[in-house]
Image 1 (tube, rainbow, N blue to C red):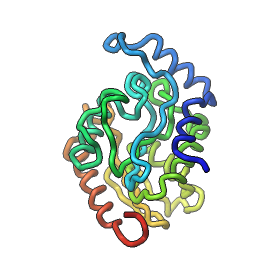
Image 2: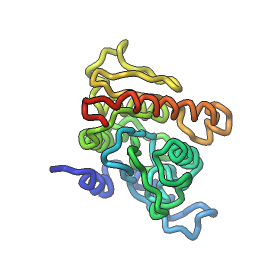
Image 3: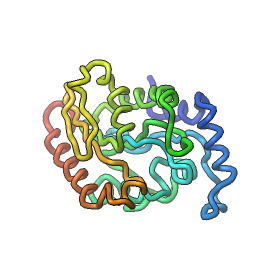
Length: 235
């Protein structure tokens, strides 16, 4: 029977998008001066976290000098600094910072994945690349059976989860949850979908996403998880 370990193996050996593979390897070879002593990961990045998680976080893609360097989602960049700090404060992460895949950080009741598994040029995967990568997210959703709340970081992650979960085609456009920061919707199967601006520097440095806005999102997530603790098995 397929497992998350199987999916991880498939992700690590994927070469379906030549443009992305070339970019990941080029960045890993040329490096950033700040990280010239690092041995970059330079390949697709798998999901990470608790296989029994009730919270699923979906991002866009690995950052060129973040997860493409460290090999773990949201690890080693400013977006990860925001994310893991919040996850620690709200009880999902064992420590408030994530700097490498062997730094001892563990997640409880939370799993982190992304719409694309390779770092894209300009942080912009093409629609075709997102489509080719989507089966990995679909397989993860099938295996993460206890998920009760999904936090989508950005519009692309929001749409990718809706497509991978099957709701994009099943729901009429008027009934599909639209993306808006701090919006929350309940899907027909009872899963809550929460949206947030991505904690990228483009958003955090400009004030489009503030610490208060970010904390409000995680407060909402915690409240929804508490509400989801019913007798339907999502405990």
